Length: 466
Length: 131
Image (cartoon, rainbow over all chains, first blue to last red; front, side, top):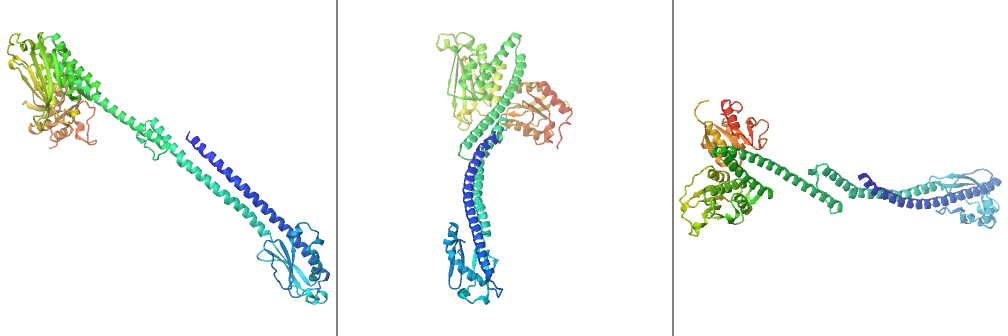
């Protein structure tokens, strides 16, 4: 996938740039070729001319050249663009226009025609030969023949030279190099540019897409901790950031899951340990099997209520009123008890013991208190007791009463004695030992009451935080 | 061992489980220190009560009893951990003396715990004696 994606960028880029480059190169090559051809043509023409001139000069020389005398070399100026071949003498310059020659003008009509006789007489006095000078100039060197200076040719007896032409071979080579050079000058930067553009695409898109792809593969294979967002503000960075957020979310959920499973495992073991211990203690404190079953199942049921309330909140904390109502109403008709108090949250660890406490107080009220009759009533109330500012406590009051007595219609209730059987012992132990609170039982005026204080610390959300 | 009553420190914040342990150890002839429900209580009992042995629930109110267990073992007092955790947390490497401390997994039968403690007292070799 990734290499296809990269090719999708790179190939059109290279093709496009190479196309532009080829067009430039071919245009410049055409121009170079035509220049090269022109130069070559000129060179050929010059060569022809020079041969012709040399031939004419030479033939003139042969006709009357008598021998050799001292040689001297005089260089005669030539037009730099080598369009002219030049014949000169000391009195002036005789120019033959190569261009006119090229136009195919007959020799008779050209200035050269008039030169020929002069050449004839001039060349008669000279010995000629061709020399290639160090700077690429092809010179025709004339050696004056002094002995033949008499006669009508005397006027030209002083002419020392002759012709010059430029050797165009170096120029031809330079033109070829220049055309190649121009192609290189245009082509190489374009190839470089295409490489730069390809590199840009690679760095900006392909490489980053590959990184994101790797991250996706990491995500698919569960290596979530390796996913970090790419820098940048483009869509690829957005994609990477989203991927990274997803990975973080999955990681944190997995972590929560592990914690929850571990917490649940712990809770199950604790619950089973509690049930086992409760079974043996209940067995020791009851007399008959039916009583054992009834008491034990009531206790286990109250633990189930606490569990139900906790499960509903994700084992976090439960609402105190919900916990009280849940557990008391399992034993007492809802019309026979009232609960009221502020909104308090019971942390998970205190929920089960508190549920058991409510259950024990309820069964105690049914078994030994007014709830056994038809007119019993239970009031449960809680409020924050801030009398000790250093250690604020939640105060929970459990009050049992007989409605008839409240109305003055019933008989005076007999004074009651509190016997702390296993039920009330459990209440005391659960509150004092397990929650770290206090318990006080009271039976004044024949009314059973229980005052529980629970330590409060931390925030409102976690009042009994351990 | 001597026939005089030995003292066991019980640290367990679950009241019902703690009560069952206390009952079982009482019936087994032990004097019970605690049961302590919090780390503070446990540390106070361990310092002031001079227990002969200790049964420690690892995760109690106020923290973990692992360090308390380590200091008891260092004092030559046999320790049995009771925990819902499979492993003892906070171990100091492979030569941690706590590695040789017996563990009883929750839910633990109190008699099993009593047996483990008695075995340690009769044959304390699994526990390194550090004066």
